Length: 247
Ligand code: BV8
Image (tube, rainbow, N blue to C red; front, side, top):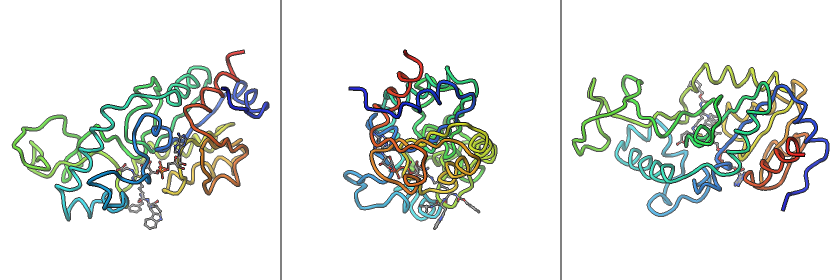
């Protein structure tokens, strides 16, 4: 069943030369990756993500935080892109200047075929040395948890941006530039509360873009968006692509 979409939206997308899309955990929900603020299951039910995804939490209990990421890496490793990821990869092929900005760390956009992806919060599949802040591809399995950097002996950590840490500067600059210069800004599957990513749709609005939210629930953006499509990314994004380019 193709959900009803505002008629003007398809035409707007089809004729747009510059489009930016911001995604959050919601677009990976249909791939079986728990959203960031969903109830943590099992062992992790006791912790709030904001309490674990910080350098302080890691230094306080490196083993706990490393094992939390191992648990999440296991889930991400089994996850496959869903029709929502695929639809954004298709849009990139139709639109001359398409920038995909993601807060997600699961790597599923690239796996779906998206090429220009700004990973504002890093990637859980990459590991780096806590002390050198440099990526480590492999390390000896000594059984120590977390493992140690083969170069300097420092603790290894996931290559993601924790709360209180700076975002990768080049990616953030490119994301702001895309938000301020696009005709259409899609905001998909994010609760729009984590800064500085949450400000991007408002930069787009201020610059005169048409802002389209795709989310089954309400967010701080809902009242301000030009269009607020209430539903799942895996259904609404393919419907948008079909309405814009498959007639
Ligand atoms: C920084 C990587 C500056 C790690 C993440 C007040 C107090 C303390 C701090 C702050 C504060 N105000 C601002 C801050 C800064 C803080 C912040 O914003 N805190 C928030 C909580 C208020 N930000 C930071 O710390 C950032 N750094 O500001 O540095 C600085 C300055 C000087 C010196 C040093 C530093 C760093 C932020 C990045 C944190 N890392 N992730 C990891 O993954 O483990 S953030 C984390 O939240 C995830 O990346 C996630 O992507 C992100 C946002 O969450 P969402 O993606 O929106 O997911 P969520 O579950 O919330 O929502 C899912 C949505 O999907 C829902 O709306 C749901 O309805 C919808 N949905 C569900 N199903 C579907 C769906 N939508 C579509 N289809 C579906 N099927």
